[in-house]
Length: 169
Image (cartoon, rainbow, N blue to C red):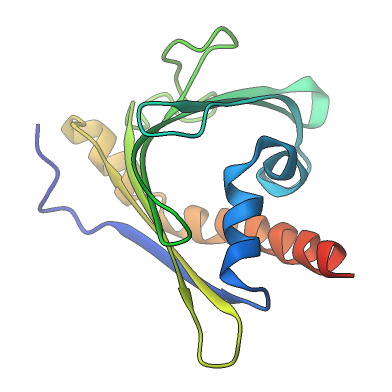
């Protein structure tokens, strides 16, 4: 099924860091594990093969031992400018999984992330999410979760901002 008529979820934020640093902390597993997780979760597994055709397989653990596993499959990489990937929940072994709290969530999300210099020396980071080949139930689940996605990304971006401040000393 094609989802081209569905408006993507788009979020954008300006960070006080150069584009090269934003790229580095978003393309290297040793950096991602410091900030790429919901509030209250920490990274328990991070395996990155950053190239077109490669993947990032990661595991997160949260309160009460809840684990979430994810997989990014890289489709397009334009250094320091853009990454396009398919995002899915996964099993600990790297197979396709389901959202542990929303079983009707689309199996795959088509994600485009971009970075551009801002006028005041920072970097504007924009992320666009859209269900990939989802059924109507998955599309409805995605569409109904926009407020939660805004809150989730706000928390993740706050963690990224704090990590960038730490790196820039």
